Image 1 (tube, rainbow, N blue to C red):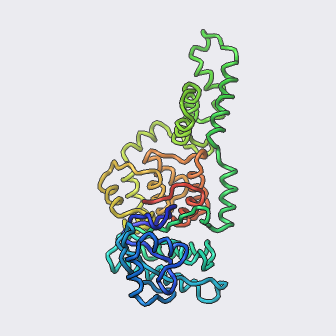
Image 2 (cartoon, rainbow, N blue to C red):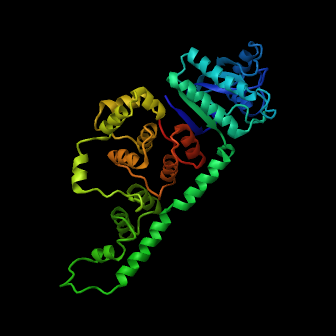
Image 3 (cartoon, helix red, strand yellow):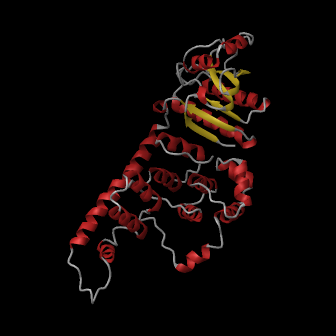
Length: 378
């Protein structure tokens, strides 16, 4: 099962176990520790008093009491003293021991806070790297749904250099909805104001004149969306934006297929192309769906149903797992009925990582979460 980064209070997550970033006494404190004890009720404190505390880097388990989980796993993270005093080793041990306890108690899902990143002072970007790396190692050999929960998205932090590069790439490539909207109206106004050609020589409707007026500025799919914008002024901006995001292509990346090519693609579905690509890459099914951050049950559905239609994030997750170059990734997406567009920040971020040869799905998801986009996998 996959790793998911979510924006939620850990005390409200419905799963088998949540992890408490505790102090060595296990008797409650501030931050996440205090919030968990308050939400769980007095029963949690009574049980914790019987445990005799906990060493840094270790973990102990109790019942969940009034929380929406069966267990609370208490782990004690290291205090940051500059990084040269074994802090990383101890923090890795926190995640590893917590996951081992969850496994011992037959947990199928567990939620972590970002351990030691609060008053203990561990730098958030470094703490996140450790968390993702240790959880990813565990998930190679085990099936478990693991959450990293952030109550306040503003405290979330990825590598600052990557964030700057991504921000610049988005700024350079993003074609927002308003750009389509207003450019469309300007182009159409110019076309409508032009003298009408002689009908005997140029039969046809005004829409034909519109097409010829700015055929070089927009793709065929973009033009169809623009026509909808012009002819349906009463529609809300949200509906129009959804039309643009789903239907428009960036001219620089749009692949024009011949009729023969299109007919030839009917025979191979998304599922069939995916399975063929897995074989071509010499991967096993397990290797592929784990690299894609996909649940085993979902992969089984895709394998057994040749006409299965995945969500766009799922389709992209498989393209990432297969480490497909951009054009091959687009081909796989097209089988599922999707395309990459420069009118979507989500798509631009995916394009950035693929173009830079970075197929680490956890790093991609960290970036997507940082820019408030849906993450890949399940």
